[in-house]
Image (cartoon, rainbow, N blue to C red; front, side, top):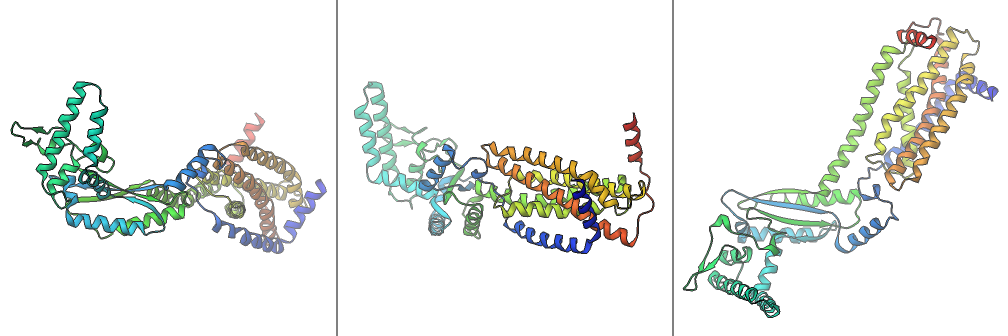
Length: 445
């Protein structure tokens, strides 16, 4: 085994041009995997596909659609949701419903107008009064029967007082929206209404009209959608509302799909920032404590190792997630360690021990323990495959693949580059380092 490492060290340092050419070719091939990386922020990252909850949810979304975009209408001061249902506003709601309903990314749409029309149909068809009558017939308690009859009479009186039963009639719209709470019948049979601020939305309509000042429209996107499909759905909703103004109301778009797409964009930007911060910290550390020639070589070696590791991860068809991106600073730290170990050992063998073949000697000493450490770590990372959480399993794969990539980058690139340097300008002096002196004193103690 010692002979193997010595020959490897001699070959890497003796033919740097060929080694770097081969390394460049490998880098280009593996870099193609970076373009295959996707950020997974849906349930597939958290639940195993065989998990009963995942199976049930997939079936549910097939039947009833997936994530919902919520359009919130907030009425201006002094206005109520009844003012949202003017003819001009209703026309825009109908246009939105038709536009969203025709989009491939949308499963279904429920507007405030649709909820109100549902109540309208129940009222004008007589179904609502029939339901009240059936409830009275089933009631056994006399007091309860009297209360239900009084409520039905009040409902009938309010309906008559509202006048024409069309949505163009504001009084009829108010009758549909507000429950009997606070209303009363005068001795002459007329309806006594409470103050506007005491009007209460009917319980059956509160999913669309939570209170007097707000209304909701739900746009359900297609079920089991990918992140790209969700992003397309968000764009459809945003584009549909662009340029539309609703009299007396402000519009706000929210929902899980918006959050997921924003999170995805943040992760992609954050991954780059995270890597740059880690490299910046390593740059400072190397500049201040690593007293050798070409001390920043380790950064280049780590950058190539990152490309190899994440490129291979992409070629495996795995996705990045909230957990797997945490592997980036871990791999940078491991890669820096490997690169520094090789670099420092070569410098010491060249200057201090005056070895005639410093690269062969360095890899003979460092190769076996580094390989053992890497194999042990890779096995430990691979043990994460027992996890039931997909993103944890992917995290283990990323680290197992990445640490091997970092070992290869550190033991191949560093000797090749340093070998080319030593041929042109051999190292003769090892610069003193306070860190090295401190380590020596601690070791001796």
